[in-house]
Length: 207
Image (cartoon, rainbow, N blue to C red; front, side, top):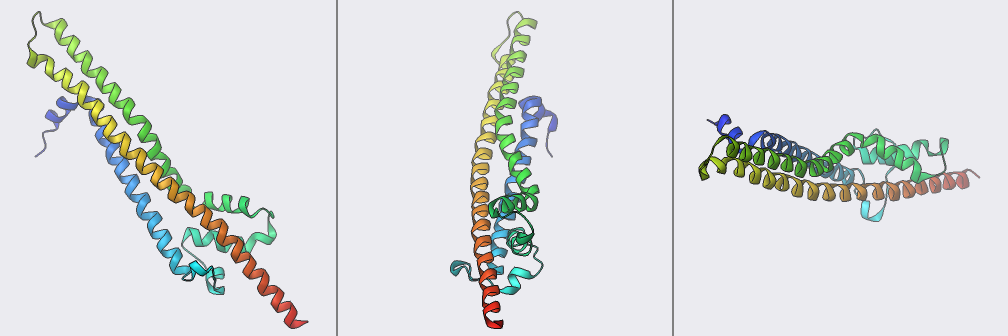
């Protein structure tokens, strides 16, 4: 049975908030990682000859649940009706299909910035406790001062322990995410080229 009162007394309000923030960081990091992993795995299944950059008509035309495959499909199906700038279209579709995961990865960046501030706030709370103890007692002993000093130090450590892994997870995921954008652009160009060549072949055959 957890002694919540004892934990709160040991780490203070800022420390409790940091525990919740750490749980949120773990949730967002794991969810984003597994989401991107599944997206890439399913994308490779949709385009099994991805290394040779070959695309089947079924992969280009059928309804896809994979957001990365949806981008390539939508570019092929709607490119002729929109701007000639494929990169701009891919950027728009990328934002639309990955809006939620983009937001969750951004939360990791927010947590990495916010955690040291919460640790500093806990340090201030701990020092306030120390000076309050000194003011209320003519000769405070070490045990009375240790509680405030402990809170001041532990929250600083907690803030850094939450911030550093969150920042590392953020950059790992954002680099992976940017790689997806490059893949979407490359495959959109090649898919359009395949469709264009197929149309030219059909026209030559009919001629």
